[in-house]
Image (cartoon, rainbow, N blue to C red; front, side):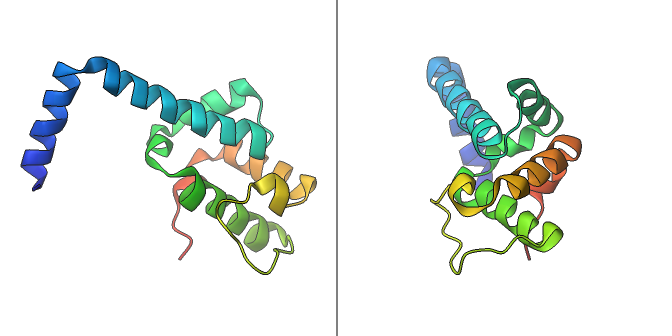
Length: 120
């Protein structure tokens, strides 16, 4: 589909099946908040503030974007020793020390845009 056709289809789905759209949005919000709370140690309120300040995070994939960027920040900014392989399905709880996760969490709470930065 070209962009115009994709936008028209999205509008049709949103109009014809608003529950599907709401369900998808709710699921994305829930999974991103779970990542921020469970893996970065933010409070629920702080996690909600991050999403409010940077709603584009809802478009980022937890595995391939958020976890990978969180691990990258811990290694590059805070000198965390990373395991040999950074596999995206492994949670940050399993990959990083509690101190490193807390540092990344504080950074994300203060500057939510860092999770959307490219690692390249």
